[in-house]
Length: 223
Image 1 (cartoon, rainbow, N blue to C red):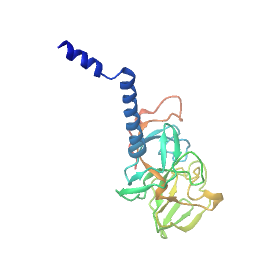
Image 2 (image 1 turned 135 degrees about the vertical axis):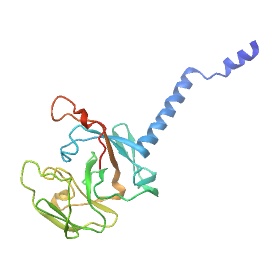
Image 3 (image 1 turned 90 degrees about the horizontal axis):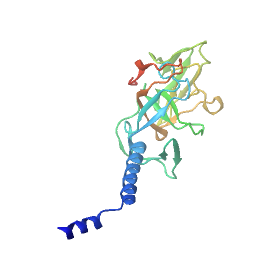
Image 4 (image 1 turned 180 degrees about the vertical axis):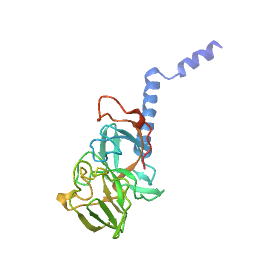
């Protein structure tokens, strides 16, 4: 028995090795979850008012639409490190739909991802006249848009959304830099490959309305 106890003590891993292996497994688990499943996102501006407020923290699902073979970028904490390959999809679960709130890469090359609502789908013609969005020439019954503090911004379009891309707008229509205004006012679209994920739920409310958090918004599901 003494001999066996001595062997077990010798075979036991040193503390530093056990700690290193535990930390390594935790890091791998974190990277898999944050790069393939979900990630947190904090609202940086008021472009999605009143749906989302500055400081709202969201859970964003990366598996609503596609399962990538490899992500287009590696997420490390709050930093996104671009990778030298394009995102290749193993499985397409569903197509993005009108009304989905999505997080996507800044289409003008900025480092901070944008969050907007999908309004126009591939192949559709989109125009904005006053406070009305037209899809294929027909007015959209748009319950999301708000024109806060001023008259609607100038009319836009019509434009046809290219295949595999999406026309997006912020809910705060008078204060949103979106598909109407990118590229020096020429407009633009979001390629499906640049969609990071779909916003699901507010897990921590922002407090840009005052010093107190509005806990009635905690756990609010989106869309």
